[in-house]
Amino acid sequence: MTETGTEDALEAADRDAVREALVEWYEAGHRDYPWRRTDDAYEILVSEVMSQQTQLDRVVKAWDAFLDRWPTVDALADADRSEVVGFWSDQRLGYNNRARYLHEAAGQVLEEFDGEFPETPDELAELMGVGPYTANAVASFAFNNGDAVVDTNVKRVLYRAFDVPDDDAVFERVAQDLMPDDASRVWNNAIMELGGVACQKTPRCDEEGCPWREWCHAYETGDFTAPDVPTQPSFEGSRRQFRGRVVRTLKEYDELALDELGPRIRVDYGGDHGQEWLRGLLADLADDELVEVEGEGDEAVVRLRA
Ligand code: SF4
Image (cartoon, rainbow, N blue to C red; front, side, top):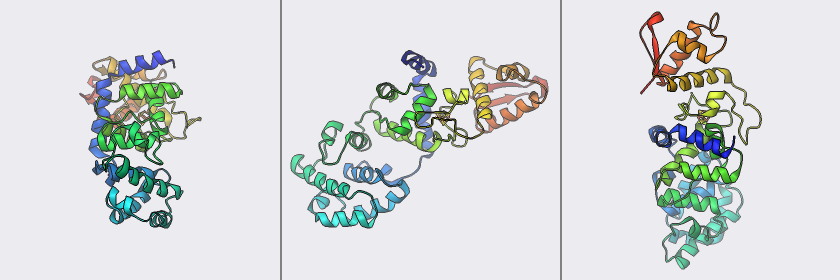
């Protein structure tokens, strides 16, 4: 799709509704990592450096142990570097240089920033071993002061949901545009969570109650390829495609009778794929609180849940 097409898609999607839906979904049930409960820049930096190479579930234990031993940036700066490196290898946290850099960065905070963490991505990136991604993550999660994160997960989500072309400059622009003002902490957490939990390489749109199903281009078309998913993931795509069509169609009409809806969902509506089939599809959508069916038999009408 062209850039203009993407903008149209986002416009049609109603940015505010898209934003609210994602934040609500995230706040209702995200994975509860301990660093998500703090806004301490030091603690967040440690979690970010550790998670660059290690699975998050393993990072939890290492992060707790690290902060028990060096609870503040001052404590880390005072530590013997070889002890920090020793801890890193004992915990199998990957390249030991990261431990050296973290120790060096703690010293920089004390000496160059008077013991106070800098709050902008640019200043944070002056710290040893802190690249643009980590600087932005710390600025977001500690100070709510970051730009929109664009990592592999976020690209996959934007590509699928809004048909954003596979072009880094466009991803950056669309991601920034979509992020609500002054909300980088919750937004970056939420969109990365969406990519990590629901919009995985093999998507779990319904299982995880993805809040963007009603706007998502992939959900509607059944094409779940993405920049890092070059071929269609193997799963029951066609049913999702029909579910997506139901949601899209009902957005256009306030309500429809079953036999008005059916032919708009599949050209071969009828026979084995008639009302009974449609009722099954609608029952799933009703269970997911996406649609409601009112009335019985041929009188039944379907609409989107408010
Ligand atoms: S509906 Fe599915 S494909 Fe679309 S954004 Fe959600 S999880 Fe990703």
